[in-house]
Amino acid sequence: MDTQLFLPFAESVQSVFSTMLALDVSVGDIEPVGESEDHDVSGIIGLSGDVTGNAALCFKTETASKIVESFVGMAMDPGSEDFSDAIGELANMVAGSAKAMYDGLHVSLTCPSVVVGLNHKVRSQREIPAVKVPCQCAHGSFFIEVSLKRTTGEAQVAA
Image 1: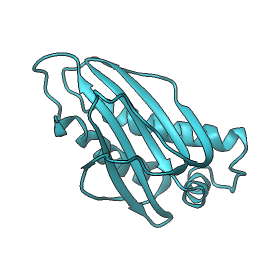
Image 2: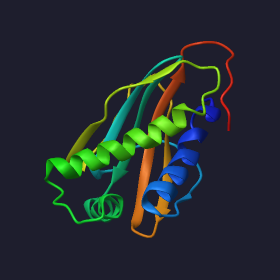
Image 3: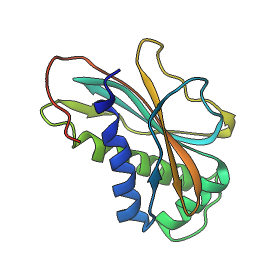
């Protein structure tokens, strides 16, 4: 597994949450995804080009609600479209920031998809390596689940 592919997501979540939400995020050790965790809210972005796969910001409802409130400056109903838009935008910013760290690689991002529903799982294709990046901030814990593989040769990933 090429761990260098996953490091930009750990750095990106710290940068985006610090800048956009004034929240410090501590990131735990990157670990392979075994059985996917249950989540209540997930913002999912697909990647294609020289690197393919997806990345998902995954939360429990309480944590997601507090994070969205910090992001937009007001409480939102987790069932509202605006709440989903905020989660999607956070996922987009984290993935966009990570993408910028892939020096020499052509990578495109999809529009974000957001899943809101108790105890869902985010699963990826079996042949694509997947990791979980545990994160902790003042509003609670969450994960970034990243499933990526290179589709080209020797370009470098900046870390």
